[in-house]
Image (tube, rainbow, N blue to C red):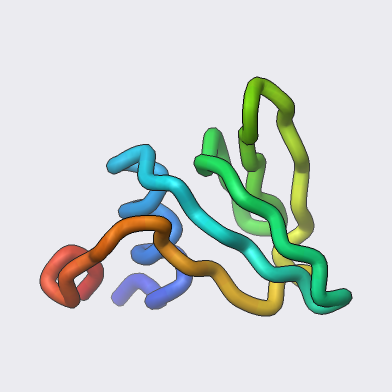
Length: 72
């Protein structure tokens, strides 16, 4: 069974949906997920790439509506 984090991030990546990522230091980042691995998320916003370590992420929100069926 895959974990919910992986499924959620993969759906956002596959659908190229805009996301908002809040870091533990209260910084808000927005963009689309270009890539991810076990430890990091690569976020693109207006042509700029940011590598974010997952341990620094507080929460991730989809920029558009996702149905529960899309995730589970």
